Image (cartoon, rainbow, N blue to C red; front, side, top):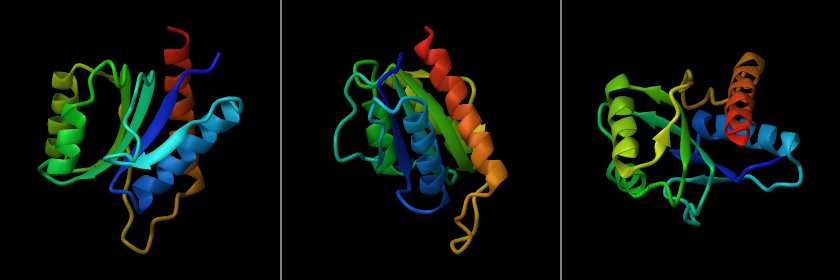
Length: 146
């Protein structure tokens, strides 16, 4: 059985977005009868009763205001579970996790740390693609079996 899931990226370009595309494609391959969206943060369409939201972020020491405001409003009625793949400063990532938890959504413990490339090296290597697809499938299946 398929669940309602979505992929959100911040920033909306670069390697984080390319990795998000890999997650979306894997979900679409697993359950072709479901539509799994991908969007930037804040998204064009608000989250509504999503069972799983994959959030990909590249952060510095602080969480930018638009990302902070979006995540602070992401409660259980919008997203039951959040899976995070991130790159950047660990302090900023920890702040983001705390913001999500305070909003009331469940942040999955299995977070994926990804390596970011330079501006001109945003491609996803085959081993990175395999890692993020395996991670996404594992989490999606676990939530689906709950």
